[in-house]
Length: 424
Ligand SMILES: [Zn+2]
Image (cartoon, rainbow, N blue to C red; front, side, top):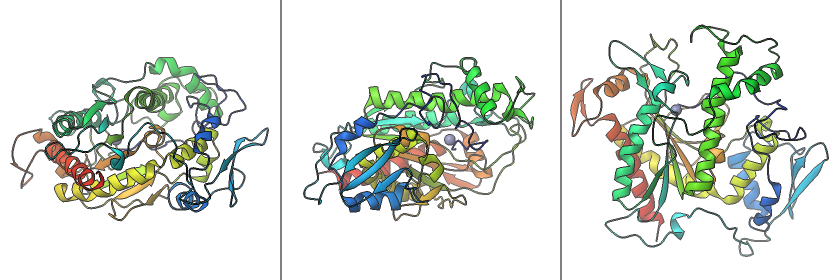
């Protein structure tokens, strides 16, 4: 399940910051890192004009791009780095595909991996598993918890960790070097909501909430989002947590690929009396489809370019577009169709969308984000309550494997299919 913004422009107007960003920076939120524009120098003459335009129009800036931020001519692109000083970074294009320089990067594409063996088709691939959310005692706070009937509560953060652990064993046996972005139902970030209350207060103030309430009554409180507690919790489990995971991925794990593991959901309303749905579906996400308003932020514009120029898309799209049909075959799930305008369908499978999520943007390597199953559908609830088991069982009138093993099998089959054909 994906974090959805509750208050538009929630954290867009902040001057305060834990990392004390200078006021001249126009950053998307108070915990964002200021862009290091000079690091884009390594991408000089690594991309042609046509390829740059193709990636902007087809993947990254599918909702348009203002000349106030990026200007393109035949020789290069000028990217706004400081709107107050009107300074720009000049990226020079390669004259042709043959003249293209190759930039260094920390991850390896399937084609550049050493040869695999028949017994270990994933030999040597560094795969980081990112089980979505935190779970455990934090599950209610992150609103990834519901309880139906007298059986145990259902929480996404624990389920994604179950999947990650089972997946790690399978991938490891096939030769992959697996790491965990999160390995327990505990936050990765060292911050807690109490550390973020002053920032939360500033967020509320910037959004016109003067003298906010400190606390809210319960999850049904209609004014909860305007309280200091709710905002500080959001800053904790979303902003701070994902940014710390990105630091772990980019500075410690250095994977060739990150798999973000989630279960999707439809709106369930009251967590103790949840609405159950007949719907069940599947989609996968890669990074892209930045909204014009997002590109106005210095950090998001910089991170978009870093991603585009690193060519993560070439690799992550192929992986997602191969993994999605495998996943569909194993799970029998139909493709999810978005009704919002913040995504663009990419690839040919019909299951893959590009979307600008924090994790898919900040992890500096190919990232594939899995969103199978509607966890509050009648069918999935029954399967979660049946738990994990070997072989098959009759659940909700159908004989099948446990939902966790099915998820894992779908991912493994997809990766095997991709790497068997794409690597040497
Ligand atoms: Zn999720």
